[in-house]
Image 1 (cartoon, rainbow, N blue to C red):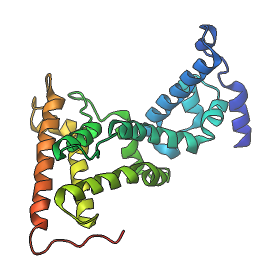
Image 2: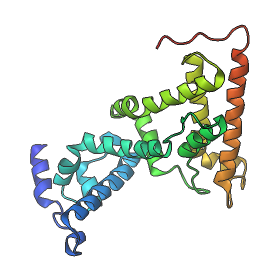
Image 3: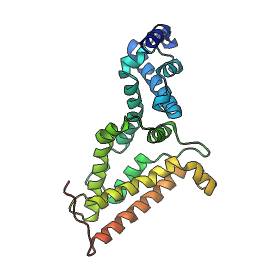
Image 4: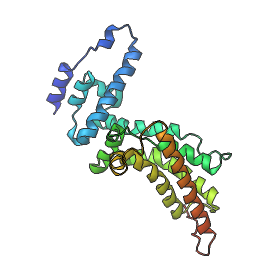
Length: 243
């Protein structure tokens, strides 16, 4: 293993066209890191963590194997970075969804709009979604830590938002279920577009298709929250979680 890594180091690409274009070292470094992330996302999505090699990723990105160590530490660090990047971008898109001054409809529009990705007609799920599907099929162990650190806090904010809008005294299991249902409705459009096109050809095509989907999802979400509010007004309202 160490011999192969040494051979990779001396035979890897040490110069790229960027080095001759007048760019600063920092600019070249940013581009090199981005290329590694792009190619690693594609290859990890296609082959999984175990099936992908650092040599293949670096050759595709036009980088020396040492670049992975420099930017990400090791293969596991690179894999973690590919999983984390779309989550960080999504979290940025969700910023402020639980501001107290927003109506429920406005809050849900921010949440669902931040989560919604509608691939082009006939296109498979995007690379990031395929990467996560691959990770679910062949777990590498990288995702659990990311879920705890970067997804759980946002999920908890959504549960707290739902508690406010359903009259709950605090978070409970039913509100977690409601949060799962709301996000699952959106995610299905990201993962199931090929099936949707087959079941209802043309429905999701044309200008404004994403906005029409979002309008419907927000309406469905408001209805689900209203149902939960009504249910809680009955004699069998759930008790608040001790968490």
